[in-house]
Amino acid sequence: MSGAINDATSPSAFSDKSAKIFVAGHRGLVGSAIVRKLQTLGFTNLVLRGHAELDLTRQNDVESFFAVEKPQFVILAAAKVGGIHANSTYPADFIAVNLQIQTNVIDASYRFGVKKLLFLGSSCIYPKFAPQPIPESALLTGPLEPTNEWYAIAKIAGIKMCQAYRIQYNWDAISGMPTNLYGPHDNFHPENSHVLPALMRRFHEAKVKGAKEVVVWGSGSPLREFLHVDDLADGVVFLMESYSGLEHVNVGSGKEVTIKELAELVKEVVGFEGELVWDSSKPDGTPRKLMDSSKLAGLGWTPKISLKDGLVDTYKWYLENVKQ
Image (cartoon, rainbow, N blue to C red):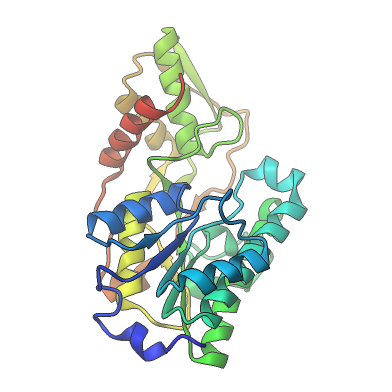
């Protein structure tokens, strides 16, 4: 009962709006955006399961689910994610849970006749001192960033598993590696959120309190790349329709912004009128992190949402959904 590669690469395969598609991890930042995108495009047969209904770390449960539902396509956006603190505190969880989810879903997808699977990774798979911008070929060319190597190793294993199943079984499994993402359903937690949602929350709270200033760590000089999660969802659909290669594909915006520029833009979008103060006695982190997304651009896809428009959209969602 293996998936047939020829079906998956024919142009009409993924465009059938009644095709049964399993989006794993549909409640997260990435999965929820993919579901929104597919629904907007008119797909009517999405299979969605929350963690309480289906624990993807349990092989028997996953196999039973695939045996009953028999999805035609799978988008694997489920993962255990977290920042530096979480990765250093719970390394066993980050490697074990992610390996379990990936192994169970990828293997069951193949064995129960899924036509095509897309596995989503992360830019943290690349070596700490990878060339900038980072091409796909940088994978496994040097040591990883030690703070999140547990998560990165699991994601690298997922890429390699997709490649191995393609080589051995001629099965259409592909991988996409997104850059730093933001948008609706992001994590705005005060302690363990990423830089963009953390800045948005801090400026909003300062505005509400009428604070005179917001202090941000570092000099503001590091360069970062951000992609709105709705752009990623668009890219995911594009890859499902148009790409069936062995190598993973970077999905980035290709646009860099300094942390200082980002902070000023967030400040403007939130409407904080006070001062922005940089505490340059605090560390800056990596000076530059940009993915080379020229391969994807060469295939014919580029992002559409500007950082300013994306921030406006994200702040609107924050105001409507995050408890103040």
